[in-house]
Amino acid sequence: MTNDSPATHATAGEVSRNFGQWQDVALTGPVIITHHGRPRVVLLSADRYARWNNLPTTGGSLQGHIAETSREALLEQMAEGFIALDPTLRVTKVNPVFEALAGRSAGQLVGAGWSDLFPLPTQAVIAEQMRRVLRTGEAVEFEADSTVQPGRCYGVRVFPYPGGVAALFANRTEEHSLRSRLRHALAMQTATTALPRLATARLNVRGVLAEMDEDFLRLAGFSSAELLDCRLTDIVRPPDRRALTQALEKVLQGGPPTRVETALLVRAGDERPIELSLAPILRDGAADGVMVLILAEA
Image (cartoon, rainbow, N blue to C red; front, side, top):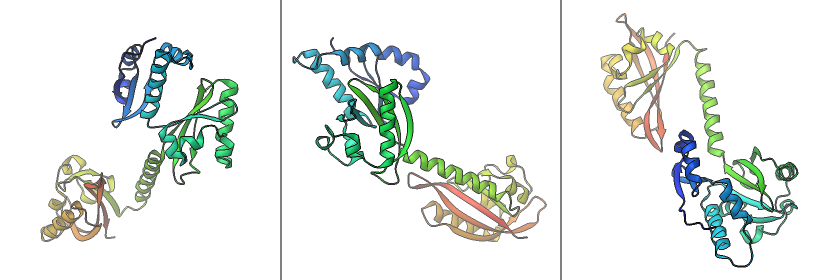
């Protein structure tokens, strides 16, 4: 078998939208699937995979050398940590990501037993899943907290591999943190509904109202359609507009959260005293808008 078909790169979104098309591409050569520009997984035809792994490992054949080189290149490009083990759970192969994850070199890992390298109870559970895959031939997926790098969480996929079993370790720490922040934000939103004098709004980088909750609309007496794309400074009393503008500008330039006392101009033409709390909404370290908490006087 020859391997003169170069690998093709595709984003995860492209593959998800046109999986059938990329399946056809994979029949002629590997498809390296990227996420945010980084290689994550490889789509490979079953026939090509089987032929690669059935090639003799001795004899120095050109085809065997090409297949082994191709597999090594794919492992080097993966963003996940990869480890392969024999039926006794002795390590036979790792990639650089797993070396970094384990904090040990390939020379220290290959040939050692899993339980010798990772003796803690959590790691023993992973070994049990590996034995299950060896016994059933079915892949399993789960998540596990890292005992080597405290605070990190990994998604683990264990699957049959020529000569034993293999596992992929994908860092899920950021996803867990995001889900946690979303849960906290939802709880905060729910908590504010119990305080009728507390309202929230979101401003874009121009200080324009982009989002308002129902409590804010009740305070102002206007509909969302009437206030959308309106500057917050336009609906506070005129003498306070300069101070509010300066406060918003400081927050958008990376300054700390701040408070401003003013009065909201409501539909009936009255002024309703309020206190504003302004905090930047950060994106890649820069302010992408302002979150506003509005506390109205009783």
